[in-house]
Each structure stands twice: as structure tokens, then as C-alpha cells.
Image 1: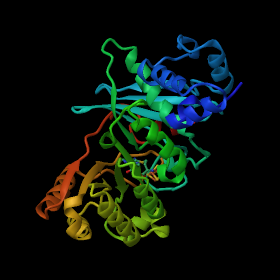
Image 2: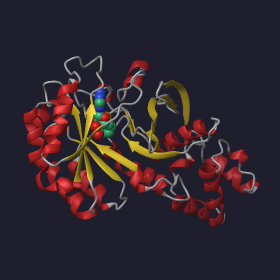
Image 3: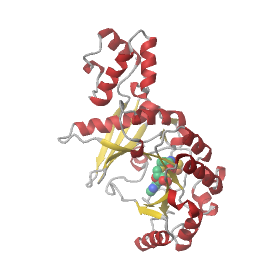
Image 4: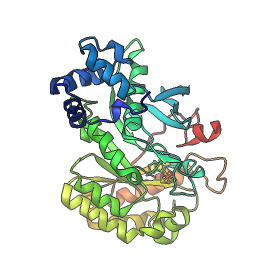
Length: 349
Ligand code: SAH
Ligand code: SF4
């Protein structure tokens, strides 16, 4: 039996594979229609594919490489899924409800090697990268769940903000983004897809050059190298100056806005002086930058980090606004379930 997920092939790759195996290009259109429009869960449901072609697909590919291990449903409608992979590793995917639609937060690696000292995912070192198929299939599984509900809603947005560092799994990330964007595939608009990186500056250049034009968010979390290096190891390899250069390259080349994520950690990076330093850092780029202020989800294993007081959060926001910086405070989802990134998974493990 094959272990290769058919969800990992871009449309062109499937066409090429079918042609190599003596079938017509048209079959790829039919197969994708079954996978992404009709969203079948078994090859046997693809009733207009000739038997010899279907048998070939069954021999070479699998249609499901993720099994639902458990899920938690929050009072606000957030659902956290834990999926078991073929090699028994567990990954998290979260479905969130917003005013503007439904977003799926997907995982890009099993564990993470970046070792940010506030993060639950960083507790478990990386076992392996997810394949492109495993990234795409998280959205498919969430969509299958929605299809079973009375009102069949559609996942309209994707954020690659689950466990792992997406730019450290570059090739598979790009494949999955192509399938998400393809109007024959998941058909999610580039502006509805966001990739978050801890700041691998070299990869940000490469990412910009792909012309995928999906949104990019950078986990900055501190206005100075001194503070950032204390909480994020990656700052040693790529200090803030290197990150800013990469951000400028992105802004100039894409003419798109970029998001800077900033978790407020009590007494560490949440004072007025830090907001002023952040505003200075953004400086003339302010037209192209949105700051997303994030509430910290406390992690049992990292008791040294606490969430900022409500007043400090508002004061930080006000200081940035007064300096003309676009900023917003991220709404929280699923606070009554294991909300922090990687928390459900680390508990299960
Ligand atoms: N590895 C990527 C994407 C996954 S993490 C990155 O770091 O950007 C997605 C976001 O959640 C990042 O901004 C990350 O810093 C943040 N995050 C991690 N742990 C958190 C926690 N306990 N509370 C709030 N945000 C957290
Ligand atoms: Fe990895 Fe992102 Fe967590 Fe850092 S914040 S350990 S990069 S998942």
C-alpha cells in the first residue's frame, strides 16, 4: 500500500503523473473535482473515473493520511482537532469563527526547533516536517467536519500559525500554498492566507521571490535585540536589523502590507518605553506595517511568563496609535479549551 497522499500533488504534478502513466490530462480535472469540489472521502466515490485509472490511483496514493484522534469544542465555536499521522505523531489544527468567515490554523511541522522560550510547541523538538499533503489535508479534514453539519459552511481563510516554523519547511509549504490558492483546488484567495514566521530572514527573501502573494506575518515580539534574544533563539542568527532588511525587501517587491506580531509579556516587553521603541523601529514603513498585539496564553511549563495586565495592553495600543502606527489587538479564541499553540498536543503527549 502506498503512503503518498494525493493531496500533496499540485494540479500540474497530477497531470504529469497521469500522462506518464498513460492517462489523459482531463482525468486530473475530474480527480480534482472529486477531491476539492465534491470533497469525497474515498476513491470509490469517484464514479466517472474509468476502473483502470482508479485502480492505478488506489495503488499509488492514499486519500486520507490524517486520523482524528480527538477534538475539543469551545463555547465560542472554536474547534481544536488533534490528528494522528501515519507514523503516529500527533498534530493540531484549529478552526476559528470570525465575523469575516471561518479560518483554519494549520500546523507545518511535528514539533518545532526554534525553541522560543514562551511557546508550548517549542517544548517538543522537531521530529519531522509535514508533507505538502499533510498540510493541505488538515484543511480538508476541517472542511469534511463542516460538511457534516446542518449548515455546510466553507473554510474561507487559512493561517499557517500552528505548530512549527513554516519557512523551515519551505518546499512543502510552497506546494501546499499552491494547492490552497488554485481555483480548481481549495480556491482560497491569496489575501485570505497568512503565513507566520519567527523571522528566518534568509527565507523571507526566498518567500518574497515565489510570487505567491499570500500575507506574511512576522513574530517580532520585542523592539530590541536584547529583549528578543532572551525569548527567541532565532534572534541570534537573524537579529532585528537583518529582519528589517528582509521586511523592506518584501515591502518594496510586493507593495503589500506586512504584519508584525507582538505578544505582550508582563513586565518584559509591555511598557510604554517598549511601545515607543517599536514605533521608532517601524518608522517610515508605517504605511506598510500592521502591528498585531497578541494576548499571551500562559503555558504551565513556562511560569516565568505572564500575560500583561489589561491596562498595560491598552496603554501599549494607545502609545502605538498616537505614534501613527496601525495596530489591532487580536481577539482570543477558545479560551476555555487548551488554547495556546501546541498546548493540547503537549498535554496528550
Ligand atoms: N512558528 C511560527 C508560526 C507558529 S506560532 C511563528 O513563530 O511565527 C504562531 C504565533 O503564535 C507566533 O506569533 C507565536 O509567537 C505565537 N505564540 C506562541 N506561543 C504563544 C502563546 N503561548 N500565547 C500566545 N501566542 C503564542
Ligand atoms: Fe516554533 Fe513559532 Fe513556537 Fe517559536 S513561536 S517555538 S517558532 S512554533
